[in-house]
Length: 83
Image (cartoon, rainbow, N blue to C red; front, side, top):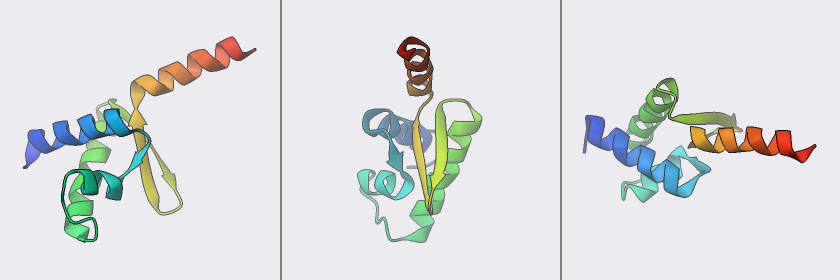
């Protein structure tokens, strides 16, 4: 799986399992999460999806965590309604 198919698969996994980090995404793709090449490929797609505005990411310790952009919008609405 390469290119756009991989990016679509990564986005689908993020949308179904948010918040999720890179190694967990690699595991859900049925790849070896200890292989740095697999981690690098998925991290590349995390960054491209973030640049496209489809996900948000945050570095927590050494882990890069992602969630769909729509969730960020829901959080903003929650903050407005909370007060």
